[in-house]
Image (cartoon, rainbow, N blue to C red; front, top):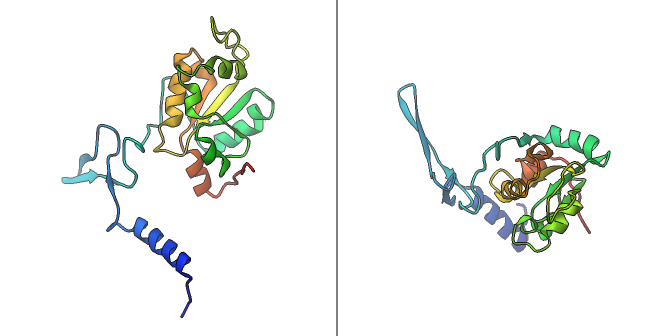
Length: 197
């Protein structure tokens, strides 16, 4: 018989319980839909979701805004190898600093969502740091970085919200990209993480 320490036993029970349908929490898929239905070969099929609650963790669309491309992992790696390496691009993790410091995509910089909000008195400074000229008056974007923004994963609205705030500030859609998979998908695929000490 295998001996399991009490702390390990509690962690094991918690992990099994969280994965078990018996303990799964019903959740909406989007802010407006808790289920989707369709007919296939005469049978009614319903798609539901269990897990984190929505609206805090709603499934995000692939396309967050017109003109903003969505990238997969290989495209993010290509962006790191080209735009980040040559100094024309930034990979931006919009999660809170504590989540960022626990592990992120290598090469990412942490710019939390709150920094992008219009009411942030330092937003002009952020835009200037992103290469925008005259950020507080008539902004110019010719020298602005191309950005890839990401959050925790496909059910995290922070990156899409940050993208909308950038677009509202006039940032060109052609200089913004969205990595929908985010930190959770990156890790789930076994890709290396950087950890800030």
